[in-house]
Image (tube, rainbow, N blue to C red):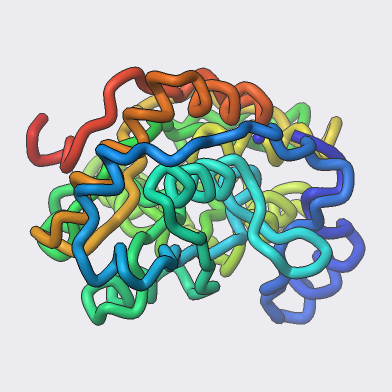
Length: 298
């Protein structure tokens, strides 16, 4: 999730990258899909599962790092938008709560949940065993990994030894995928992959268009969105692979996982979930059954 001007202007990004600075701005919402307009009603059964303290507070605090369009990004007013933000708003509505958003660096969201300042982490987290040691995940979407290269340049993700590959810092691609692929290159007696880690996904995509990286890798909806925004400058490299569940992170064993799960399943059942995904063009990763901690349950 797909439209023009969701990525910063190329000239501005080029200047920032060439001077060694990092662009921490988020994509503009200009030309992005209109909100789905989905009407969501409270689900009393889901709301009854909320911890008493949260039900009394009346507000559901989401932690998000809105630089991963079209999942979560900022509009011109600096407010978080995106299909996952719409899903979060709908969860709050199902639970009879008012949504509130705490903007944070991606790596600070889970500590915020553990520390009690954030109720739900909503930032395209891949549910994995390591993260499940700290929080519970309510699984709401399935995304694979998709590489992209400059138009006309063939890159094979399975044969990328010696190439420069851009990633967004602290993502799965940064911490797991590229290090593992690079280690395999070295073990085979080949050159390692040179990882180019940048603060935002739009910067990673733009690095490829500027020739500063041979390719970038990201979750499939994010890569496809970047290709659409930079029309004619990027192309897919290889097929989507390693599909894994996105999870909304909540405090471990707090009861929140069951409440959020019930709210999301209610959305699936009444069609509001599918309506939001369709409005943003990301229906392919939608699921029918909302689960908890899919990584550990296989």
